[in-house]
Image 1: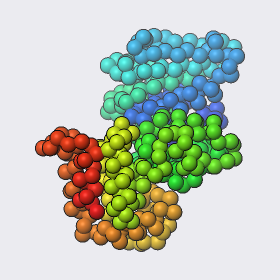
Image 2 (image 1 turned 135 degrees about the vertical axis):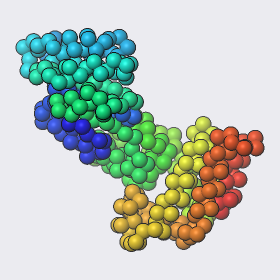
Image 3 (image 1 turned 45 degrees about the vertical axis):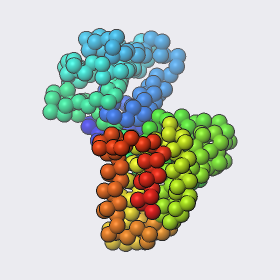
Image 4 (image 1 turned 120 degrees about the vertical axis):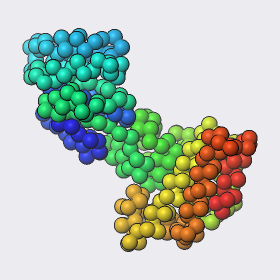
Amino acid sequence: MLNYFSLDVYASVKSAILQRKFSPIYFLMGDEPYFIDEISNLLIETVLPEKQRDFNQTILYGKDTSIEEVVSVCKRFPMMAEHQLVVVREAHELSRSIEQLTSYAEQPQSTTVLVVCFKNKKLDKRKKLAKALQKSGAVVETKKLYDNKLPSWIEERVRALSRNIDYKAVAVLAESVGADLGALHNQLEKLCVIVAKGETITVDHVEQHVGISKDYNTFELRKALGAGNTAKAFTIAHYFGLHPKQHSLLGTINSLYAFFMQLLTYHGLPSKNPDAVAKALGVHPFFVKEIEQAARRYPLKSIVSILNTIKKADLAAKGVEAVPISEGEALRQLIAKLT
């Protein structure tokens, strides 16, 4: 079974594991290590009870093993247990010889659960191994989440940790940490040490314990631009210039580009119903009023030229035909052109 990644696929794979409906092979590949780690760790926790792990669980590392050894271990029988679990971490180190796993994939040991963690790599779907795994295993190709999927992922993770989180805290975390799910997960766990079960994580908690200012972040910069609050936009730009490590110019430019692409999408929507807008843009309904306000300030005819301006700023930040200036000054110049 070859699964192209989505959050629904991820939930389905986890659900089957928790129901102990194991596949003989889990081939976890792609460019989002967080999901690969989550599925492999869940299998480690679920396949075998702790007392059976000493004799029936083997963890191998790609740089220290070979396909021959992996297959040899997989062909063993479990000792006084229903299954044995074999996990190959850093399997990308075996990318040159990974096709040698084909013969085993065609006839996997029914009592073995093999987990291959093939991070930041993908199988060639035209070759024999991928075709064999489609018949005998579960292949999950993970992908980075799009920015508009981050808020719902954050809310889901917080619910799983038995807490709530307010919409502004979600927005600030998504904007400031970005699509690094490992980093986001670590920050959420840190916040859950501070916030008790059943209580709500607020933007004040984020500011105090994650180190992200609730007043000086890309979310507030976009809001200031949309509201026509030029003074606040320049104040935030000045703050970013003083803290370039926390607020990189390229990161801010990417956020601004995404914001104006949202406005471009908004202008093209057939329905401006708040629920339809929230769904189309992937935002919390609370933010629709701010988007409507920004869209009035930036009509459709102005957005194409604004996007070109931001693209030029992006090239300059990468050193293409750039005049040497500080990141703070470059951002202030860009803000001046957007206000």
